[in-house]
Image 1 (cartoon, one colour):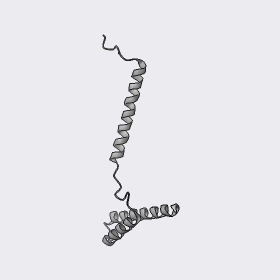
Image 2: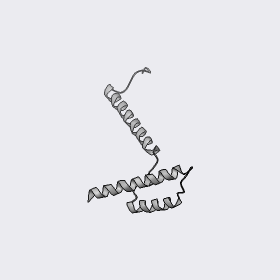
Image 3: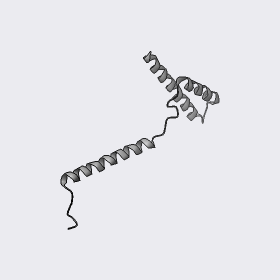
Image 4: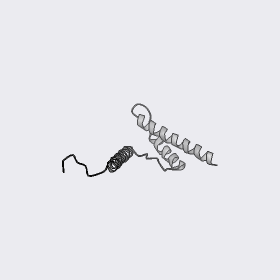
Length: 91
């Protein structure tokens, strides 16, 4: 048997190559999804979000250096509004 002699048919070779590319794509997509940061507010109800907003707004002092806290408060407020609008549409 020469080193370049194949023991598989062209159809089997194409199918195996297609399978490898499919697995590669699935792994890449899985790696991308696992690399995304999780949403700490996912699954929270409107009332839970409102309580969290109240707690965080009490701790917020404002001014320079509090940009992250302000951004987090805005994110929570946006989620509250989105969920409130979604529940109004369901009624």
